[in-house]
Image (cartoon, rainbow, N blue to C red):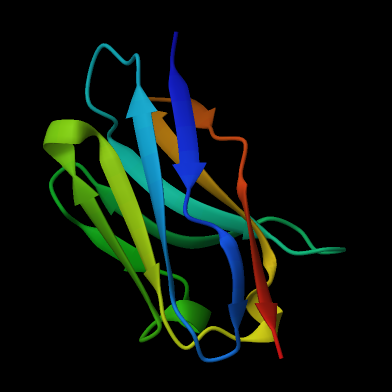
Length: 115
């Protein structure tokens, strides 16, 4: 059974940092792409960053310079280092693992940034 589990969320003051982790397990092959998304209250889910199995990375423009995605292929882990957090970064953060056309989502981890 495939599982995608996020961790590392919490409450942080504006200007602070958090590191999110995501573990994907139960897949027959390594995920092609792993990515981070978020959904803020009253807003649609948005892509933050993605990383392929060979290390290609893309970021949403609004997180460039603040968020960094990285991946440990041997352990099927992906991380999101978030710096200079702002209250508007408050959201539920989701990890997605893609294998071909199949996508697996985690349950999400809450990030709350206080002003």
